[in-house]
View 1 (cartoon, one colour):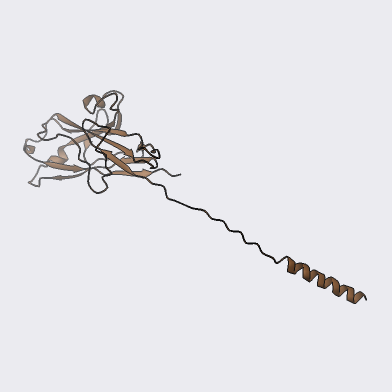
View 2 (cartoon, rainbow, N blue to C red):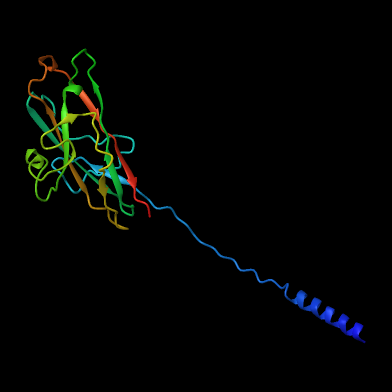
Length: 208
């Protein structure tokens, strides 16, 4: 009798184990999308909020320097505005040194003789001209007392900040003013020489 009862308990345990093997699958799902980061430039001079704005990923924005006929001791000025496009993250921008080419007709060359510096400014309170480089100026390249070769870029530890855009509107513009100059005492043999400078601006998105 005790043996039968023990067998019954064993069967009972087996039945309980079988019932516990029922399964009820549950699934989870998540959708993902990548953020966007797009920066565009506007070289209009004088600055026009309406543009032309373009991304310039393949072709360079042409600065309105009006640098033809530059003479020793003179300077030319050109504005450049940057902003993120609608829906874009914010980030930073870094102005690299220029790639400079000349007319290739012997030494000296005009490009190495030219100097420049860059500040940020606000079109609502001033223009891209000599006074923008005065007291209180925020220098991106060079200083109030120093101009540098065109091949000198921005300090990588101090990049520009590009604010994030809204879902349906671009971000606030960051305004640069470039001053290009030919120092006094420049070589007389530079007369009639030409040069082209191309700057690369590297923009990096913020992390979220």
